[in-house]
Image (cartoon, one colour):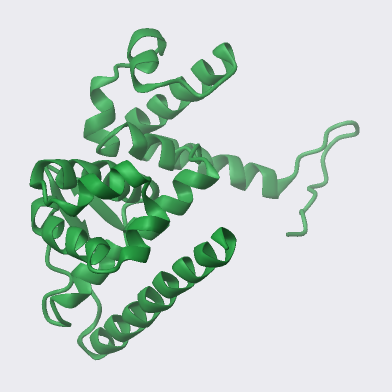
Length: 222
């Protein structure tokens, strides 16, 4: 963007575009001051100790109340996602699990896919998706994890979904999706004439990304 310089006294230089950016950033902080305070505390602690703090380290050392993390981000991973602090591996897993959740959501059909859902509802589909194809388990889990996953355990699966991807997704979506009180909601209300197109495009993107993920992983593992 080209900056616009105002005619000001000598040795005084004010850039309008910078002022606008600062104003927008300040407005964003004011909209969610508690959320921004948590992120700022996280980044300060990371700088102070030289590495990404764990949840417990944040609770013990950060200049913010860790109890608000769950209220604002759903979980600590949600804060990491919002702050842009996920590793490449974490992002890779997040995208993969997100596609499986979308597969389940889309399987409910065009009229119901935007209805809120719980991790408990998603869990059976998530488990079945991985266990119906051996290569899916081999790609995403260690040998021991794969053995454990073959036996359905609702508590473990819902716990996994809560951490990854539901909390991550909620924390990084800027309000497009939310995960509160174990209820996952896509906050989109399409016009009636757009509903079919949105559903179809989302389904096509989901199918492509899921296939591309395993294709890429299989080539890497060969």
